Image (cartoon, rainbow, N blue to C red; front, side, top):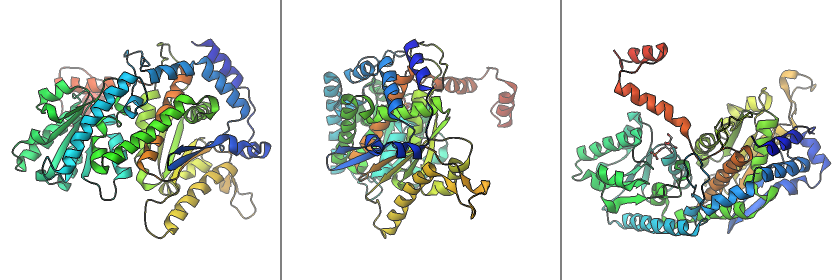
Length: 510
Ligand code: F6P
């Protein structure tokens, strides 16, 4: 156990918390201190954390917590490509894919990116024939990033129509088949390990579909995106159509690598590079900024405050932007697979809550569904609102005005509370207020902004892990269930009575 960390936590838990409105009233400089714009060239993003309970005193102590947690050294190791994943003895070099990291890794990533650019542009130029559709098959980190980015950036006039299929449930693949013509479809098989059962089963079925659709050389239509190129060769993919990436890139951090191939195919190479550049701007900010001015670290301070001091078990993200509808799913994997741990990086059991449950949706839809609990429920849920000033639509500007006013109104209502009854006394109509929210306001949801937004969350997740002393880069928690599924397939293994009965009921076990 890190006793210096425990000592800081003791101090942190002694504060008396004024309400959010009191905090604004007490400190005229609060907004300026906690609302910061990050420029990304032509556009920028405003990160407003002023409607959280962070105070100067908390920030001082959280900075002390970062110091005793060796945040600066851990961040140096991250960008230097040193081991930050001790259980697997690995570095975590996703930032090198954006050009920020150890020199040799940045060079290696650039060479792999050139190879990917060559193939992407060749496809756009028609070298592989008429390509109208791409079915991207992958799961978890090999699917969520591409799905999010394609949905966010390629809704209108994609260069190629992309379908991301992850689930082993054949319904998902059938849906993609129904939307594509086998004669003009390419398959991207995305798997870091090239062994994941869902992906390999879906890929085999997609090959059959191509064959049945009259494609004479189905494997000739496959692009493999993987850190295990030898496995892709064994599977039958020609070396020229394998786009590798480094083993030191974790699955949930891999959309910047060749796993992002469908993004580049849908939006074009320049736009893909612009997404990487936006992420690189966030990398540089995170690498070079100290203390509370560091945006992902500041967000992690608030995350730690709510989880540990206020006992919040969940954190919600509401995107007031239809194009970011998949962001909560993406962040669920990023945050829960990274920080949903019960032991420290040294393997000691933790005696504090680690990652809260990340959940969310899109506004304004969610207002008419789950916001009741946020305003009047007994759970305190810190909320992030994400919106773009420039609309994604060309309809009557009333649409976007109503969208944004609702977004800001929700944050204001959570902060201020009130009573909606005529005499102001009906408890059923009372809103306690003093409920925290942060707002991320983008100038425009362009590729650079999306890149920076995702990188912000990657670094926030890392910063949280460092403050807790846990390893965010392994994910052994996903293994046991996978093994049990294999045991069921293999047969002859005993399970608990309920599982055995379910297997029998489904006809999977005699
Ligand atoms: O089961 C979890 C996981 O290992 C994720 O971490 C990963 O992104 C996903 O499975 C897919 O793995 P792969 O890219 O090797 O197919």
